[in-house]
Image 1: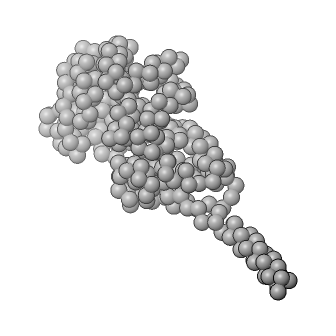
Image 2: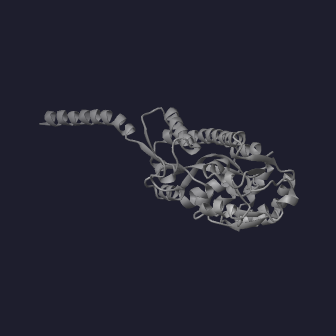
Image 3: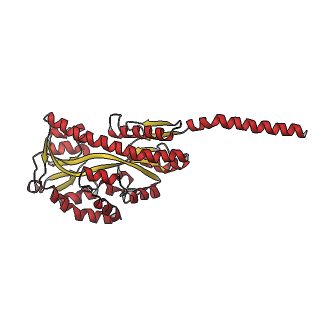
Length: 333
């Protein structure tokens, strides 16, 4: 009887060993990460997220599956951020800082006008630890990790007449977004900002309600604003920051080596996305200029704009408890 029991025990251990061996690769193959984007595959965000998945797979070196929900299939960026916070439906996405403001008071400073001096400064900041306090705040309050920084769209003034200097800029009727910092900043720059629904901007310029808007080249092209406002005044007042976000709840469930791969891939995918979007932004402007749709105008007094913007930036950073972030950004040369 003892011999039979011993034999049965050995058989049981052997069976468990075989089951474990069979299931090990299966478990690895069962890891599926889901991303989401509002756009199609030709958009810089999608290219960045596809690169992110490719790099994770490369650095992880084990079977893993990715599903990217495209073209707004799962809603808009604000929805994605909520899903990631809850740990449902979406594991990773690119989300504008404004959509994080419900959780993090500090996040919107990443979109503040004149935060960056130029593209070189912007790129150095995003390669630094300057935004770490924001990332820590978002992770702590929303349980969403900022694993990389994409973006690169340069926002200029799109105007129905040539504007070359401060005298011509003064009292310009400009459409701005609803965020209070937008009205405060452009008022300080001597313009006359007005909040208007984005879908009404074209008609508002056409009918003379406003004279200008501010935006990136992709929106200028897709919305055909050049038909009513063909003058692109290079104020370069904002360069977009678009964090690659990852659900904290998902992240903690993953193997340590996959977590390391995600963090490494996030930084590299962010740099890749910045390169793509900034290049595409410039090429779109050049294409529209070549086609005779726009006139690119160098603004002569940009240094004055930076001077006027400084006290507004400092006041806004204080309101957001983000003085440390602003100081760190400003200190980068």
